[in-house]
Image 1 (cartoon, rainbow, N blue to C red):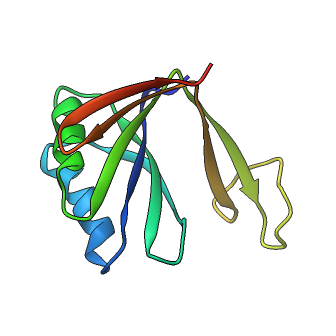
Image 2: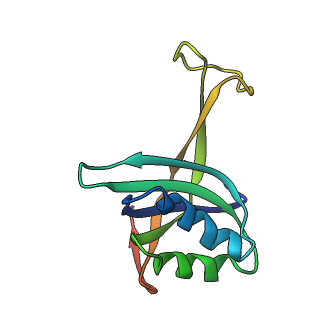
Length: 127
């Protein structure tokens, strides 16, 4: 299990400020980010940003504020989740020993989603 919250932020990358706005909303309320991964979903500029944030007294408010941010379509809290760590060496092979020279990717595994879009929430159970 994680010590924080796993988030998936879905939005449109129209300019480099997209990632800055996501991080800025969280940091403005003193919510720390443990790790962040992003990937392009389609040719229209839709991106998924996965991250783990530390739990704190402002975490819920930061998530709701993030769902109201420009270019963010929705924010999903991946509940009942954990992360699986993959470490790759400089040859692209999976390395058993993660270290500072390797690329480390965290893959979230979860069974429930609580989503927020413009402050409104919804829930999905994946079982």
